[in-house]
Image 1 (cartoon, helix red, strand yellow):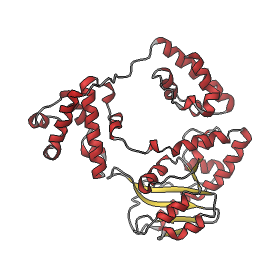
Image 2 (cartoon, rainbow, N blue to C red):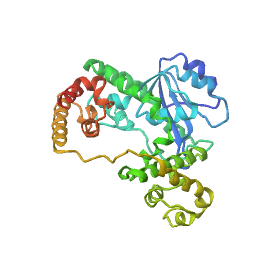
Image 3 (tube, helix red, strand yellow):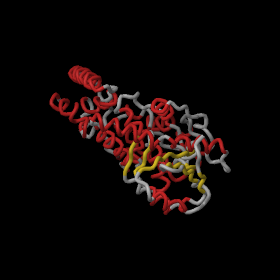
Image 4 (cartoon, one colour):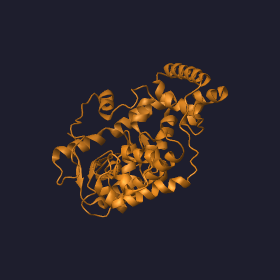
Length: 357
């Protein structure tokens, strides 16, 4: 088992963190009962020591965060780790290297888990039995802390091996480019006006019903943010979709909607009805996605084949280069900000795709 130091006063290790260019970083958090993830533990691995930092003991963490953000973070599948730190501390590292991304660019299985990568690189089996543990409990059992420390123990050794192999293949810049995309704040900032994109079933609504669904989704998002409770605890998707479809204009009509608890109607019924009423004035020009035509289908199939052949020549999975969803976004939806059309992917497949459009 790895040796680690439990840190109750995070600022006390800031000076040591400042000595390192690269640190392995992982987090443990809870999200079942809240809108925002509750940060419960921060694991930091240097070349000499593993710190398990407790953010729940009430000590100030400002100096700790400032020091940690100066280092290049080495993470594995780090999007959630960046998100929980960004939402908890409103800070983001200046540089990031994701070993899952790096492994994919060397031909390992796409989305390979940390335990699988450690087994592949070092022939070591690591414990994943505490994935669903209650990380907010205090004191944390030793078994939890050993598990947490193991989650960062191999990140820096993996960095060394993966960067060497990537450099040999001329793909190190690819991994750095894809890793850097995880540092875009747009991925983590929450805009209630875009909440309808998360509402299951809303993509097929049109006109006023679409406008009503958008207002209802924005209302729920705002309430969930304010109360720090999961969206579905505020109101279920199915209930909001039924409201957007039936457009009730009274508390009595609202009470007939399936899945609308009486308590919610008493507390927020007027707000819901107001959202429905205001949708009558919205000019929703949204139209549901249309089915691809035959030319688009043929082009998508052709480009998928070219991507598969290109990826195979490099020993990569096709989805690592460009997934069907990525390609469809360009060919069918007309998106021009797709990752297929930027960076190293543009050189491989993006320019060819643009020529055929």
